[in-house]
Length: 313
Image (cartoon, rainbow, N blue to C red):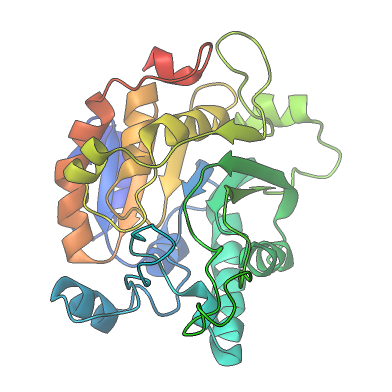
């Protein structure tokens, strides 16, 4: 781990946690400076670089004075949870989002080893925009992982006209979350087996029972216990993340990177499955949160369906 720490800390504030490293800085800056072709895989849930994680919006949300993370109206018998207003993006913000992911995708390709996988969270509303931007950045699109989870997002009646149009929904009720699967192109003429021998990349790790990793994962909303450990607005459950992280290192060796660490849940998943990971987080509030949350999240015993990875951790 000392080699990893020496090579990847650079001159930023950092903390070693188990076998992993947490670095406080902007991921664009870090990814442009880190050694090229040294990361085996990336697993991340980005803030999409538009409104919802701007410092002024975070300050408003922290102070209870609004911000983009807002509580939607309480009707239909459901109290909604805070969620980002993705549907409120205007044309300029959409262009900014696309530009953001083209640039970020180019940096991801820079630091990934040939054949290294990138798995990125999205949502049904933005995935086509985000995924096409990563293809423009020369990452190979390899499909999607569908996280089956009922978030209660969408399905609302028309805003401010609920009684006038009681039989109408403005969008479908969300029952899944798409995670894009990408791969840095392998060298010309390489087969997957060549890439595995040369770079320890190129494929996805099979499940412990020998069956292939599957692209549909029956999930659940993040448990209250995990939320108490890591109070972050987009926290994903360990039962899901550990399966994703396990799959991205085909030989069970290498480094997993999360450039948008947040509360550190991806790093905790890597620790739980015995991997080395690097987390990058620019916001001091979340960096401090991750330092405390990662050890606790990684030690959680997660129950899951029969034959799932959850039961192993």
